[in-house]
Amino acid sequence: MTLQTVILGTIVILCAALAVYSEWLRPLRYPLTQWTIPLRRLSRKDWGIVTVLLLVVFIQQRLRAEGYLNSGLLLGLILLTLWCGWIRQPIARVSAEGIVINGQFIRWAHIKHYHLTAEGALILTLAQQQVTLCVQHADDLQRLYQHIIAQPNQ
Image 1 (tube, rainbow, N blue to C red):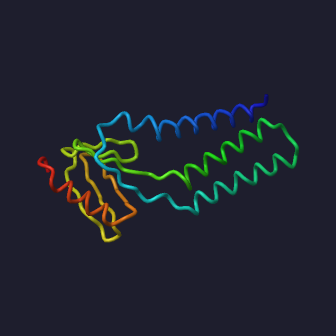
Image 2: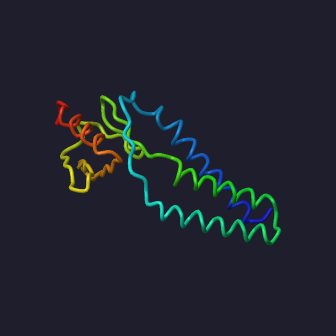
Image 3: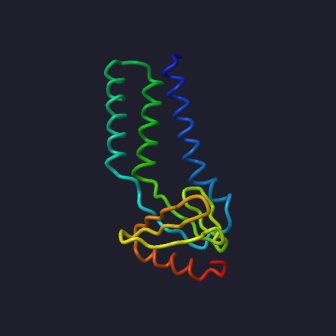
């Protein structure tokens, strides 16, 4: 087993663990979700470039007729890239206590200021950072905005 195989295997295992954690384990860490809001994805061009580069490396690996383990690990990495960039839908989870955005739980009381931008994004200002919410549907953004306004601690 070469160093390349060990590194590639470690990357695939870590990516698979992250996928399992983000889809099934992360929702268990936070309060009961009232509703979810689908967020905009990162640029498909970026994910397309990464996927194509991985496919080129995979094809080169197969043409050189190197080991099946490396090819299998590269294929696993390609599938995880497709899952992360093209299949998986990022979401925000709204509960009575707060909102979960990208794995960060923000209590309603911690939001100091909020405003809507012309581009259709909601910017939440916390004590030490700003969080931007870019949603897919304007109705979801309006519903969330109304929910934040209705909170008693604002």
